[in-house]
Length: 83
Ligand SMILES: Cc1cc2nc3c(=O)[nH]c(=O)nc-3n(C[C@H](O)[C@H](O)[C@H](O)COP(=O)(O)OP(=O)(O)OC[C@H]3O[C@@H](n4cnc5c(N)ncnc54)[C@H](O)[C@@H]3O)c2cc1C
Image (tube, rainbow, N blue to C red; front, side, top):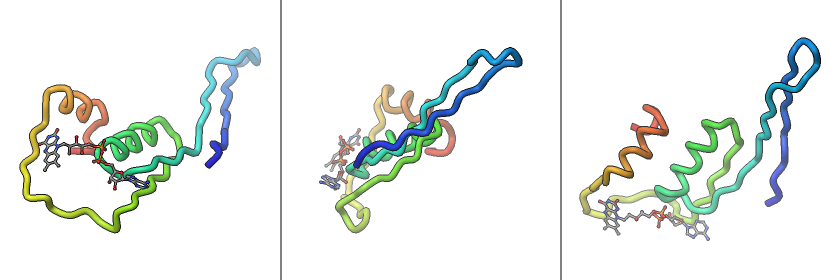
């Protein structure tokens, strides 16, 4: 799927460009932890994100969840919405 660009410019009173935001429509293939984490992070930046997942649902696998320090830092960086 081709990315569609939305470009926003902000100008100061003299007409000089002070900020530029390029927002994208992004397709992510795979709704695992990697895909969903990327989707949340990209949405937080203002991008439109669609996640395509082949599985019809999520199911328990009978295992525990162990979060390493790097993982916890990454989740903290995404904010309270992922807690
Ligand atoms: C039993 C078990 C216990 C684990 N416990 C831990 C743990 O405690 N802590 C830890 O850090 N890690 C754990 N892991 C490892 C962890 O689950 C993986 O490292 C992690 O899920 C990888 O995430 P991912 O998003 O890269 O891939 P995945 O989780 O594999 O997600 C990929 C997704 O993409 C989808 N997909 C693939 N191809 C397509 C396609 N063509 N179109 C659409 N969708 C597609 C798949 O259906 C899947 O949902 C465990 C793994 C297992 C199996």
